[in-house]
Length: 259
Image 1 (cartoon, rainbow, N blue to C red):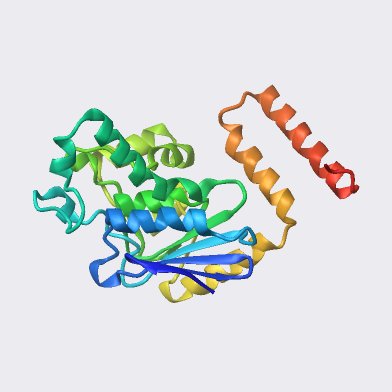
Image 2: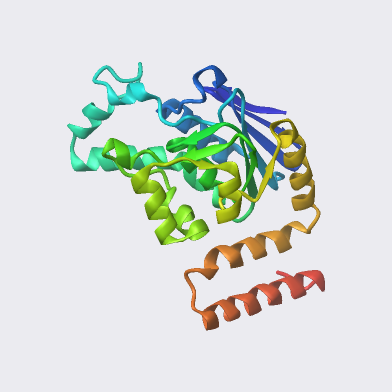
């Protein structure tokens, strides 16, 4: 079933699996506000039957980052340029950035598991979109870089939190400030990538992981994801209490006593 196909984003649903494909491969899937709106719309439009969302991209690159036209005074046709946004009020600028962030936030919600398949470049906004997903499988030619700081900006599309959570503060700071590229082998070693495969094997690896993620009962997966996502913000005793509460819900549900 086709759910959406516009502005460089195509979404199809096959039972419990939704596939989100970036389709502007000729431009290395450069990101625009219109693409971000389409991605945000995807999160709202997913049927409740979807358990796994696979994010992939056409062309040689996953996403080479923001469309550079946004930095010019002319901007991207039909969109406010960044210089124009900067000239606006604090409230308008904050609201614009918050709207852009919506494309990157829903991927980590507890009722779905999200997997990015990354080939080629994942730069800036592309890196942050891959970070928005729960898991990442990378082709051997994948290369991550956070270039915002080099441009006088900061990563502002939700990427800083998962980046620090995955690789720690010191590595995250070094990557963001230097803007250096992290190749696939290093990405796997430091925890950015769950698996690295030859480029030709990326689709099959995504299929295999999707099947494995669907094997466990959905409610147990939802509870487990919620526990793990909240662990860093809780102390040890609070986490143990959260585990007890989640397990009580599961035991009652399995016994037919859930309400």
